[in-house]
View 1 (cartoon, helix red, strand yellow):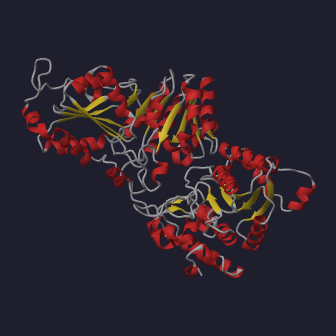
View 2: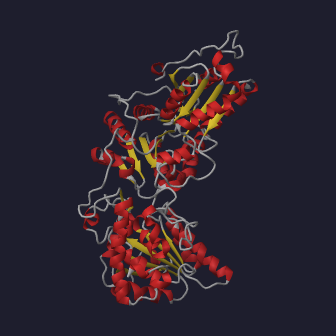
View 3: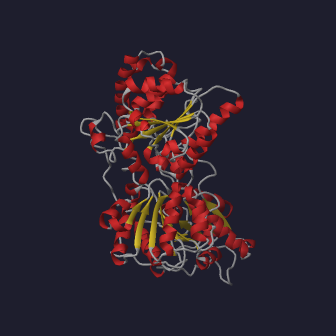
Amino acid sequence: MLDRIRSTQDLRSLEHLELVRLADELRAETLKVVSETGGHLGSSLGVIELTIAIHAVFDTPHDKLLWDVGHQCYPHKILTGRRERMSSLRKKGGISGFTRRSESPYDPFGAAHSSTSISAGLGFSVGFDLAGEEGHVVCVIGDGAMSAGMAFEALNNAGSLGRRLIVILNDNDMSISPSTGALARHLSRIRQITDAPEAAATGRHNLFQNFGLRYVGPIDGHDLHTLLPLLRSLKEADPGPILLHAVTRKGAGYHHAEAAPDKFHGVNPFDILSGTQVKTPAKAPVYTKVFANALIAEARRDKRIIGITAAMAAGTGIDLFQKEFPDRCFDVGIAEQHAVTFAAGLAASGMKPFCAIYSSFLQRAYDQIVHDVALQNLPVRFAIDRAGLVGADGPTHAGAFDIGYLANLPNFTVMAASDEAELVHMVSTAAAHDSGPIAFRYPRGEGTGISLPAEGQALQIGRGRIVESGRHVALLSFGTRLAECLSARRMLADYGISVTVADARFAKPLDTALIAELFANHELLLTVEEGATGGFGALVLHYLAQKGMLDGRTRIRTLTLPDHFIAQASPEDMYDEARLTARHIAGQVRGVLAPHVSEVINGHTRARGGHQDATPQVHRAEDRG
């Protein structure tokens, strides 16, 4: 049956029983694809019947179908002309793991972050009306995503505008992990109501009706015999917002995923029969676990330390903290804005909150960071996971902007770990820092394999370190590109270029003494960071300009992420495109020095303080902590 589907027009020509058969084939196809490519499995298996029913009833792509977050969109993509390309899912140049406007007209709105669909869908609905067009808008949003403030803002607006809009609440009692909070309890009570007319007769209204939406449900979201006629009825209903409550099972139809939905949310390639995922043996501990263990160690010494996450307990390692300190750990749901101000309140009460959030998700709480934390100089600790480029999840999950948007705030201290040992020390530094907000960033994936300290030591605020000393060129790294800088140093040695490699540690406050020293004693200073323009390198340039140091002959360049979004690929390929590998760093140095290489190497450089080719007075790594 699936072989007959090239577009949704083909799907709409099928009879009812053929659609039921199609559901079985689509589930098998989705399972096969993800077993080979990896990706978001459980959420996609949970919406097989919903996907078929929506496309069978509504005139997509003219009618707009919006998938909140988008990680459940694989069946949708298979049915909308992309089946042959699904083997490229989440790979370089391939199909995105989320909806993307540039990929297909069936993806009217891009998504990857939570709780945006109702707002965007309402915009499409108003757009239809203002253009004088007939059209329907369907938003599919999970119960976890529904808990976010933005979703409620949109419901509030939709209820007052009264426009035609169908919101399907895909209620599987999960986000990535089980849903939390009062809304989860409210939906649980609703799910227990099996006789909707009886509930209506009692006059009891639920939350959505109080927002002004017509409420329908709860229904079995896997039953096409119910879904198809009900959606046809809702399509012909009078204008006005409708919420259809569909109860589904994450991972439906695949017993391994149903038994462990959190383990099968995002998966590596796996064996379908056993459910065993293919995992490369780890060469070093992952940064997330290093952070979690370091935080646990600090919390054992200080009862004021609190762990906070926004529906990403496993992703941030806070689940490990929660096992040992359940009373000092808070998963606030998909609510980054609340998480930050909640942490601010804890800090104001004398606690030491650690807010563990992905860099790309922390963007959602910027006003709270500015107004509730920085302005009041409250010592909230921000553990910023997934800094830099993240691989298969692509640009929507890249941690590109936090250096710039945090380091420009008064009162903030901003750090970046160059390896997993430094991360341990930065957790200790944050725990000891009570004079204002402090943030430390670290990437996804494995560390370098360096030995971890038995105990973290608080770093001196605003002091970096020189890792290797040289004479001609200084590479000043902020974050985990330090390893690439060290590799570039070895490459440049083959050309007779002697390189100093320094680890800045801090973007704010800058180690101005270190910067001035490197600038004064080298022919070229090159800053390297895993962040967008306007970040660490810009701060260094600003300092040098303010001090009048750019008026001399020393050259300075900055290496940052490029001024465009980098599409999904392996992290290695993404950093290659960003020109932040050792090869590119070395190439940049050679390119800048090309007209002067012989002079630099032979020591025919300008005098510095009366001496030729002065060797910098370096601070050794062991002296800077």
